[in-house]
Image 1 (spheres, helix red, strand yellow):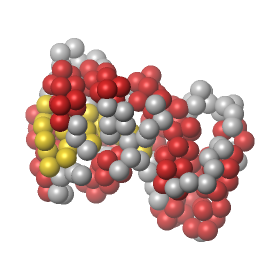
Image 2 (cartoon, rainbow, N blue to C red; image 1 turned 60 degrees about the vertical axis):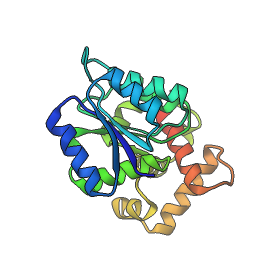
Image 3 (cartoon, rainbow, N blue to C red; image 1 turned 120 degrees about the horizontal axis):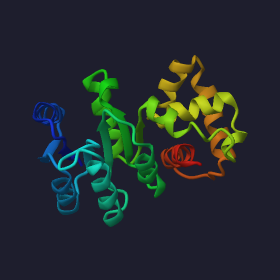
Length: 216
């Protein structure tokens, strides 16, 4: 694993991503600047993860996300990390809708350091999620009454939101000023209320996050 495809129309940012990823041990299999090139690369190269801008040539509207959606229809579960200045709620929901995980959505001006970004790339490549808090907030704006999410306590929702960002139990405990055992207890409660029976905990975390983000 570690094969990456980059789709970004701005040369300086695209070149910077190439050098950053290579410095952290990734192999960049392609760095493209348009929607058609992205779709072709995703289907033919099947990278371990793709970093995709939303707005690409030729129309600079939603070519990146459209290409990502089309590719995931042909290659289910293809890992996609959206890195954009914009939150496109409809397409973000569509990316989450197949329930397979391996999705990230980060806003460019909220990625604060290289380690944060590289960690997100690796999580998505491994089948997890990496969602910007602002993206989460917009996706959840109309979900307050959704069942069974309505059964979650306020603290459980905070824990699940942190899980959606890709945080570990240790990181969640530090953020919410809880012990790790308390976080584990809240996590178990979340799994139970969402009907996620015993299985691999990493898989259950992804399924819980997808239920949380993709509810309507």
